[in-house]
Length: 350
Image 1 (cartoon, rainbow, N blue to C red):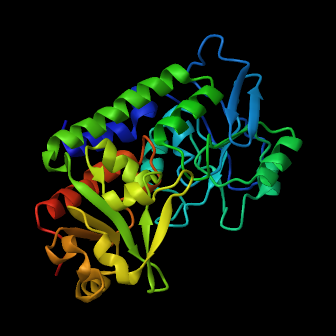
Image 2: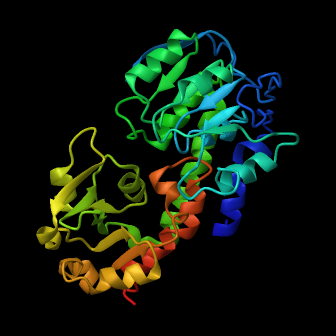
């Protein structure tokens, strides 16, 4: 398929192709009268199921219907399996007018009568009281930063919670899909969605063969210009690029530690960020020029050779930083062609 067709197909993966359906909640967090009904089939003998995770062990006795998703991309997972969550994180970075993402809304629109979930902010922690008011029978938080205390408060309220398997914000999209599939009793459907999503990645890698074996560093200056942040091998951005055939730089391989998704180096050491291609963020096109003209940034060999890409539009790479079966096709379509161009020497230098 072409990239455009892949995007449309994957965005509606489990709602159109797999005819999934469930209705969500109203925008009032205290209104739980609208009981959702899922029409995807629950696997035979799926319940009870016990799921082990970093914060404990969760047993789910029967198929959940009122699901709350905690984490930036967490709501994409039940939706990709045909279950509309009744509550979900506000998408406060690169979100749309619904405090949602365009790919979530596109998939939601394929379901007749489905409503937007109640959105809540987790900027200051998980809002336990608001979640309890939604009367969920399951909270998924596989890609979140939920704390042990917040987890305990929800479970003490009688709500099963499935947290991340190892460390906050370090979960792969495959792990999230498998865990949410288990929790919803839809492991067979999750396996189908995984296969479809992996095909999107494989098609992208085939379309851009210059990715194979290319080393990269994904980094940028901190707010304090005396240091640079560098994403580790545990961060989902590098993980997805590696899935496409790229390789982390030697510095990143050396400095990455379990459970950490970034480390810092002093600005004077930017030359150590050497790789075939350098990837970073910019706040505007003017900021791209500022970075290109910055002597410290120009110490990075890939920047000096215009083998770098500074992303301005935050939508482009959200699918890498917050991956899901719905967001990944967007990143493959929007971001990866820019990475391939940078590898070829047609980078961001004005």
